[in-house]
Length: 221
Image (cartoon, rainbow, N blue to C red; front, side, top):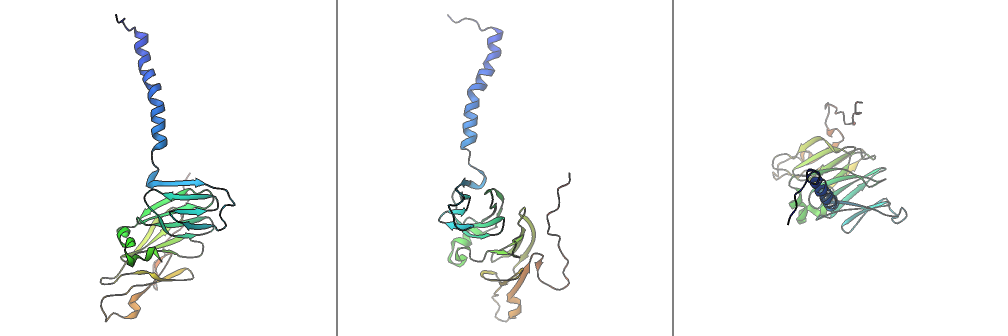
């Protein structure tokens, strides 16, 4: 014989269900993959002699190791307090060297297929720091050059390649705070001066250009 359930017991049923569901919800939260497949693992401070290295499928610094599920790093640039990494799936990330926190992610449109082909040269020359401090980063692909502010990943400017031409990141050269990038064109009559483009933190180097304010603004209180 099944007894009747009193009002007090009925009020306890939702509480009991919550107590059962709570551990399951916490477990599901723990196993949920991080955004973009990021996994940052602390390591002993003296384990890595160099400030930033690419080791197989990982990015290794003195205090941490950074991996991403389903992708491997192709190139990295390290500075005083942060490092920028290019991944084979066309993602660019910036990490704090002190704690390994991934500060931002930016996807390069259409880059994954190009990076996988021989002409991608393993991402050689794609990351160009515009200045020794690395406060501005140029990301060079055949179709465009994009300038990002390293502090927060803000896209500051985009320079598309001329029609019939394509940038070649592997033939980029740093000169002080500027990068000179080859832009070969299909037209054999094109002047050689049109096949070299110089960019710095403000965009394309040109006379009488309008300056950009690339510094990160203070957050109002």
